[in-house]
Length: 151
Image (cartoon, rainbow, N blue to C red; front, side, top):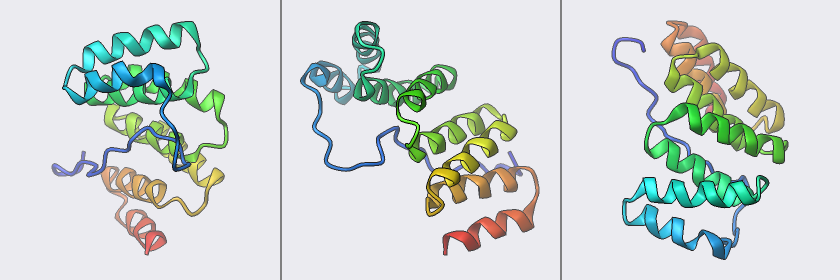
Protein backbone atom coordinates (compact mmCIF):
# COMPACT_ATOMS: atom_id res chain seq x y z
CA UNK A 1 0.00 0.00 0.00
CA UNK A 2 1.40 3.42 -0.96
CA UNK A 3 0.69 6.11 1.66
CA UNK A 4 -2.74 4.70 2.47
CA UNK A 5 -3.66 4.09 -1.17
CA UNK A 6 -5.79 1.04 -1.74
CA UNK A 7 -7.61 -0.34 -4.75
CA UNK A 8 -10.97 1.40 -5.08
CA UNK A 9 -12.83 -1.30 -6.97
CA UNK A 10 -13.99 -4.73 -6.00
CA UNK A 11 -14.75 -6.86 -9.04
CA UNK A 12 -17.75 -9.10 -9.18
CA UNK A 13 -16.82 -12.63 -10.08
CA UNK A 14 -19.34 -12.87 -12.87
CA UNK A 15 -18.99 -14.07 -16.45
CA UNK A 16 -18.01 -11.71 -19.26
CA UNK A 17 -21.35 -12.36 -20.95
CA UNK A 18 -24.65 -10.70 -20.15
CA UNK A 19 -28.15 -12.08 -19.85
CA UNK A 20 -27.27 -15.29 -18.01
CA UNK A 21 -30.20 -17.23 -16.55
CA UNK A 22 -29.65 -18.25 -12.94
CA UNK A 23 -29.71 -21.99 -12.34
CA UNK A 24 -32.72 -22.87 -10.15
CA UNK A 25 -30.59 -24.78 -7.63
CA UNK A 26 -28.87 -21.50 -6.72
CA UNK A 27 -32.04 -19.79 -5.49
CA UNK A 28 -31.49 -20.79 -1.86
CA UNK A 29 -27.89 -19.58 -1.77
CA UNK A 30 -28.82 -16.33 -3.53
CA UNK A 31 -31.62 -15.77 -1.00
CA UNK A 32 -29.14 -16.40 1.83
CA UNK A 33 -26.71 -13.88 0.34
CA UNK A 34 -29.44 -11.30 -0.11
CA UNK A 35 -30.48 -11.71 3.52
CA UNK A 36 -26.86 -11.27 4.62
CA UNK A 37 -26.23 -14.90 5.63
CA UNK A 38 -23.04 -15.35 3.64
CA UNK A 39 -21.92 -18.42 5.61
CA UNK A 40 -25.18 -20.28 4.89
CA UNK A 41 -24.83 -19.40 1.22
CA UNK A 42 -21.27 -20.73 1.18
CA UNK A 43 -22.32 -24.03 2.79
CA UNK A 44 -25.08 -24.50 0.23
CA UNK A 45 -22.81 -23.54 -2.68
CA UNK A 46 -20.08 -25.89 -1.50
CA UNK A 47 -22.62 -28.73 -1.54
CA UNK A 48 -23.59 -27.86 -5.13
CA UNK A 49 -19.94 -27.70 -6.23
CA UNK A 50 -19.16 -31.01 -4.47
CA UNK A 51 -21.80 -32.71 -6.57
CA UNK A 52 -20.78 -30.87 -9.78
CA UNK A 53 -17.26 -29.41 -9.79
CA UNK A 54 -17.94 -27.76 -13.15
CA UNK A 55 -21.05 -25.83 -12.05
CA UNK A 56 -19.71 -22.49 -13.21
CA UNK A 57 -22.54 -20.35 -11.85
CA UNK A 58 -22.25 -21.91 -8.40
CA UNK A 59 -18.49 -21.38 -8.48
CA UNK A 60 -18.91 -17.71 -9.44
CA UNK A 61 -21.40 -17.05 -6.67
CA UNK A 62 -19.17 -18.98 -4.24
CA UNK A 63 -16.13 -16.88 -5.19
CA UNK A 64 -18.19 -13.71 -4.70
CA UNK A 65 -19.34 -14.97 -1.28
CA UNK A 66 -15.75 -15.65 -0.23
CA UNK A 67 -14.87 -12.15 -1.44
CA UNK A 68 -17.63 -10.69 0.76
CA UNK A 69 -16.00 -12.41 3.75
CA UNK A 70 -12.56 -11.22 2.58
CA UNK A 71 -11.47 -14.86 2.45
CA UNK A 72 -9.12 -14.16 -0.43
CA UNK A 73 -7.38 -17.54 -0.31
CA UNK A 74 -10.64 -19.45 -0.85
CA UNK A 75 -11.79 -16.92 -3.44
CA UNK A 76 -8.54 -17.45 -5.36
CA UNK A 77 -8.92 -21.23 -5.30
CA UNK A 78 -12.49 -20.91 -6.55
CA UNK A 79 -11.54 -18.41 -9.27
CA UNK A 80 -8.82 -20.77 -10.45
CA UNK A 81 -11.46 -23.50 -10.82
CA UNK A 82 -13.54 -21.12 -12.92
CA UNK A 83 -10.51 -20.22 -15.04
CA UNK A 84 -9.85 -23.91 -15.68
CA UNK A 85 -13.44 -24.33 -16.89
CA UNK A 86 -13.56 -21.14 -19.00
CA UNK A 87 -10.11 -20.26 -20.30
CA UNK A 88 -11.53 -17.40 -22.41
CA UNK A 89 -12.86 -15.42 -19.44
CA UNK A 90 -10.70 -12.32 -19.03
CA UNK A 91 -12.84 -11.10 -16.14
CA UNK A 92 -11.85 -14.02 -13.93
CA UNK A 93 -8.20 -13.07 -14.47
CA UNK A 94 -8.99 -9.52 -13.36
CA UNK A 95 -10.66 -10.95 -10.27
CA UNK A 96 -7.56 -13.08 -9.57
CA UNK A 97 -5.36 -10.00 -10.01
CA UNK A 98 -7.49 -8.10 -7.52
CA UNK A 99 -7.45 -10.97 -5.02
CA UNK A 100 -3.68 -11.34 -5.15
CA UNK A 101 -3.38 -7.58 -4.83
CA UNK A 102 -5.46 -7.77 -1.63
CA UNK A 103 -3.04 -10.40 -0.30
CA UNK A 104 -0.11 -8.11 -1.11
CA UNK A 105 1.28 -10.40 -3.81
CA UNK A 106 1.82 -7.73 -6.44
CA UNK A 107 3.81 -10.01 -8.76
CA UNK A 108 0.90 -12.46 -9.03
CA UNK A 109 -1.59 -9.59 -9.33
CA UNK A 110 0.40 -8.12 -12.20
CA UNK A 111 0.62 -11.51 -13.90
CA UNK A 112 -3.16 -12.02 -13.83
CA UNK A 113 -3.95 -8.48 -14.98
CA UNK A 114 -1.57 -9.00 -17.92
CA UNK A 115 -3.17 -12.38 -18.68
CA UNK A 116 -6.56 -10.64 -18.75
CA UNK A 117 -5.22 -8.18 -21.31
CA UNK A 118 -3.87 -11.11 -23.34
CA UNK A 119 -7.42 -12.44 -23.56
CA UNK A 120 -9.09 -9.05 -24.01
CA UNK A 121 -6.74 -6.12 -24.75
CA UNK A 122 -9.61 -3.64 -24.30
CA UNK A 123 -10.45 -4.61 -20.73
CA UNK A 124 -10.27 -1.35 -18.80
CA UNK A 125 -10.42 -3.07 -15.40
CA UNK A 126 -7.15 -4.88 -16.15
CA UNK A 127 -5.42 -1.58 -16.97
CA UNK A 128 -6.86 -0.07 -13.78
CA UNK A 129 -5.60 -3.03 -11.75
CA UNK A 130 -2.15 -2.74 -13.28
CA UNK A 131 -2.20 0.98 -12.54
CA UNK A 132 -2.90 0.25 -8.86
CA UNK A 133 -0.11 -2.35 -8.76
CA UNK A 134 2.36 0.16 -10.20
CA UNK A 135 1.13 2.85 -7.81
CA UNK A 136 1.53 0.53 -4.83
CA UNK A 137 5.10 -0.15 -5.96
CA UNK A 138 5.80 3.55 -6.28
CA UNK A 139 6.16 3.28 -10.07
CA UNK A 140 4.29 6.49 -10.79
CA UNK A 141 5.19 6.82 -14.46
CA UNK A 142 4.02 3.29 -15.20
CA UNK A 143 0.83 3.90 -13.19
CA UNK A 144 0.17 7.00 -15.32
CA UNK A 145 0.75 4.92 -18.46
CA UNK A 146 -2.06 2.59 -17.34
CA UNK A 147 -4.36 5.59 -16.84
CA UNK A 148 -3.53 6.72 -20.36
CA UNK A 149 -4.55 3.29 -21.67
CA UNK A 150 -8.02 3.71 -20.15
CA UNK A 151 -8.78 7.12 -21.61
